[in-house]
Length: 318
Image (cartoon, rainbow, N blue to C red):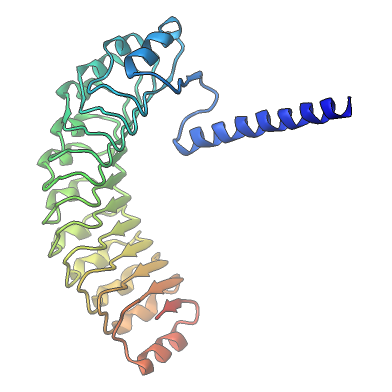
């Protein structure tokens, strides 16, 4: 009898932990855990959708991850209340015009697929806010994405993108743009039109120089330019007065411009693996700077001690 009681409580604990783990995963995806959610862990995309058709008018999150099929199931158009579409680690090669029939869709997660094409009709999704298409086969950014009036986050890490379309200037709502690990060779000047952009990630591209226009992003709080071929920052970087985090590792940057002293909100700087040599005197103005990474630097031992003394609030990782 005691064994049965123990088994019951163990089982109850497992169910409870499983529930909170499930809700935690949804929260990480930015999903409201109070919505109706169906996830089937087997079958093709068509089979999953077919099994859910009786509930099509209540399903708000649909997960087609780990399924076969190069296109979205045709019956997906019947899920009129769908808000989140997940299709990670699938065989999907295109996001077809079917998505245009999902008027409530707000988020698309399709990482680690084989997507090469996105239907122009995606622009009809007036509520779409977040698009994550990392690790796919995109060679260019479809211009219609920038016609989405509410698009806030666009994550296209690890594709084969070489340039950005000028249409990005038509997307004033954009706050996060991640184009890390692509093949971009020039900093997109027309990004300056994105006055609400807060996070810009261009890690691991082929950028060699930075234009003065990069200083025209007043809302920017995080800038990641690591692993490019940059040798210097323009003076205009000092205009990014809201910048908090600056990642410049794995480039060829030997020093920072004097205007760096204008960035009073800066709390983290990474200039590691640059062969970094010296800081400008204006660096001392950064009273909120908490940490500076400098692996593989060329700063003299005397200068190291000097900066440690002048900026005791800052942790220099020499």
